[in-house]
Amino acid sequence: MDPPLCSLFRSADEPMCPGLPGDPSGPEALEWLALCWLLIWATVFLVCYLRARFRGPSSQRLQSIRRTAVFGAGFSLSVLLCCALNVRARNFGRWGELKQHLLVFAEDARRFEAEHGPINSENVRAFYELEAQKGRTRTFLFGARGPEVHIVFRHVGGHRPMIIWGHGGSAGFDLDTMYCDVSD
Image 1 (cartoon, rainbow, N blue to C red):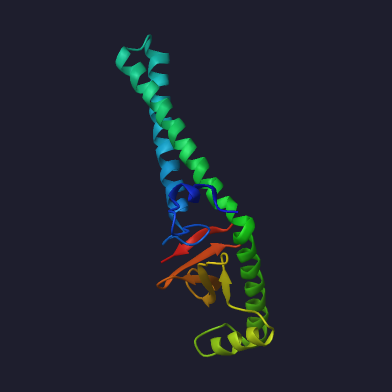
Image 2 (image 1 turned 90 degrees about the horizontal axis):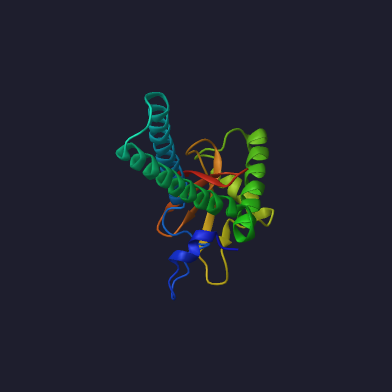
């Protein structure tokens, strides 16, 4: 299942989603931006409402600002909900399968660290060899045509499994929500 907004940007010859279109933290960044605008519009509406309430009938200008604030808040809320839906969709379909791979990889890393100490540049090769012996692959395909991502263990944003795709772009996810909290 593709995240909902991805179908809007799909071209005929290049499947963009559920692949990684360059930076998976785009919906997360847009969520925060929409939330900020929602708070700004709600504040403008509240100030206009309170001014009209305590100072008597409001002017046409104040009513116009209040109507604009309602429209802006509604638009911001719809953008926020669309982005939230896009992020939450990562728990299903191929993204859900990737999540399961990341959870297994994280659990294996915890076990390895309990026995051998923290995974670092000296023992990471041993960790990957142990994973290979268990028959676990570090690659994941988002479909027959790709794209292909590689699961790695990094110390960026804490010790965690991350994915690498394309030309070295990487992303780390909160494994409970699949919210992308580290991306480069």
